[in-house]
Length: 113
Image (cartoon, rainbow, N blue to C red; front, side, top):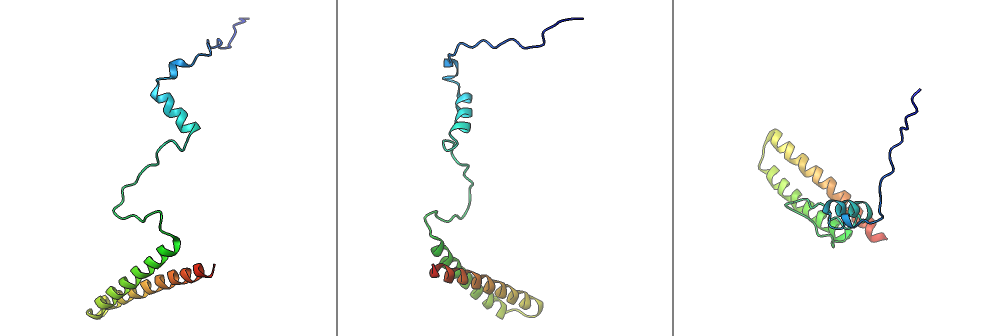
């Protein structure tokens, strides 16, 4: 029977990691695993964005105003239509009014606290 040793040879280490000092890949790997905040967050390009400094209440007030304006536009458009198109436009008015009611309810709950 053959008595061959299947163990791998011990790696030769000197304890000196200066070879990794100027290695960009090693630095990125260390930053990724040890300092996740160092990596910059991925920025997604958007046409419209809301400032991070807008409070929840301010955002709800603005959303309510936008929904009010959208309902007025849809209502005006529906007035000049006939038949199925008119019905469709008024269903949009109804959905906007429901969304506005939900936002307004959220605002009321926000002001209670």
